[in-house]
Length: 495
Picture 1 (tube, rainbow, N blue to C red):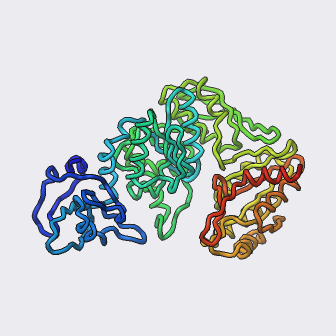
Picture 2: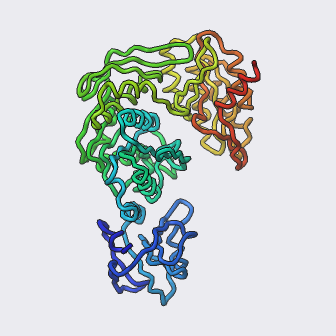
Picture 3: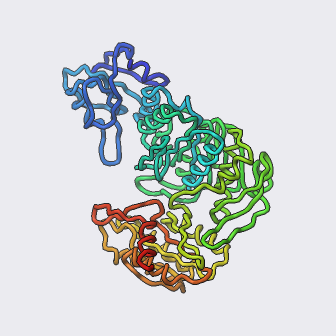
């Protein structure tokens, strides 16, 4: 492929080695595009990426020795004195990589309907709801998210919520090859900040909600930066579909270049939920509601609470743009399941047990307050916290569970390189700020068995923190551990 084709739409300057001699991109042939210095070979276009722990610019001389076709750099690079290696100078190599990758894979996004979802909570569930609805209407839909990537019948474990731009374009190219019509993907604030989703325009961009999260040295410097990065999606989509009830929606949309639609409960939104009624059956919690505005229908969802209605409204708004009828939307809404997101596991007709990914205080509080609306006999919360992470999270989660659950079972999560008992002690410090009753059981299977064995009529039991994860990380090793399997083992042992 000609280098000039890969660089279309980018501002750049090409020089020979360290000199000021300018080169013509039309004359340079590229064999492949690489951003991993270990994979450089003759004819590669090597993109120098500066990461948190490693700077690809330090490998420029290595690229010259291996006869790379050219390198893309945003900073000065050191090359052998006699090197004529073409150096493409750009303002930002991550931004450039997104456009180069899109061109390398022949712009797959232009052959798909693209839907991007950003927000603090609800991204994962909403992607699955949208996929379920569109597939029910006859579309073939790829998915890219926190849990997995789905391409046809292939399910690929996800490393990042939003993959690096090269990988993202590669996934979309495979979706086109597999006959997909559309792709729905989670777009994280980190992904937007690092230009992973650049190189194309989304057909639909979605904002679910925002609360302070992902703020720290290696993420966002403050809440304003977090909001700014979320808002970048609405300068990169044709239609923006936003939660009209979120107090920060106007800030997120600042400077937007898209058409805007809203959903929610207030009277000014374009699609509004009305006539809510909670459903509680043995082993199952859900909501009935109707919609008015741009689409009018009756809906039932098998997830509890108001936040589940927000996710459903968002998915309904997207499905409308694909021409889906209420008759196609309703059964897809009712049947959609997401692993580890308020996932009901039937163990008894007397009480309800669920698995959820809530792994910080904000998510746990949201979940427990929602479940309170279902008036359980007792609300039982089982959770642990990850090792080598903020101790503040442990104190906060302990305090939240102590205040909002009737009984807490403190156990182990991913201790990593810390001692589980030390983590449990920190959680206990938080829970002791409340009057909440609790027990400590370090082994997670034993803790789950305790919860099941002591379940009473009308209880709601939440296993929080692991969600879709099927491992436990201890001292650098990931051991297989799936809560669904643990539950089944416990039930089998009790027979």
